[in-house]
Length: 269
Image (cartoon, rainbow, N blue to C red; front, side, top):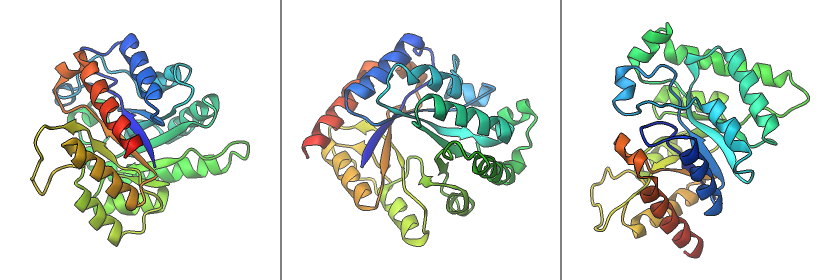
């Protein structure tokens, strides 16, 4: 099972130097994958949690591809209805080619209503548009005999999202769910692959809440989460060390220490 990191590509503490250090730290710790998030118009509903500067994901990953040549690169998740699907198909395929086949396109339908309004995209149609755009991506890549289709991870855990993952995806990519919830979904849905993104927050005392998200708790709890996800068939688990406070982007070394602790103990577990 491979491990990845969701790197904050936003916030007051994020700049090119910090992004470079995130990539170097992840690669140096032996992680396999670096992923970033997506917002186009940082409207007030977005800015409250993910403020400027917000680095556009395709540009950011293209730049980082040369900084950490040992890492796969991906989006977690690209809001697919924000961009024309032919543009996404070309951009994703180009990034995959230039990085030597290292790109993973994680996609979702989005949640920020005001951002949809700013972009002129109907919020209520986002699920239908995502399905249509995924079909276009698949058709476009199928016609390119000179290059592989880009792997697609489909986010979300609604019934519609799971149908979307089965129909269009290479993996189901749930975000921040408890292990028990993921196990229940996998027992009922024949997804093509499993690559969850989980939180990463170590506590000094065990977290006993039955709704505890995977990755939150003592080191022993987090290591057990990883073992359970591996047993459920996870090919990759992506850690998300950001917990909603933009000021944390000014203190990336705290996240790096946590990643170091988990990576070191996981390798020796």
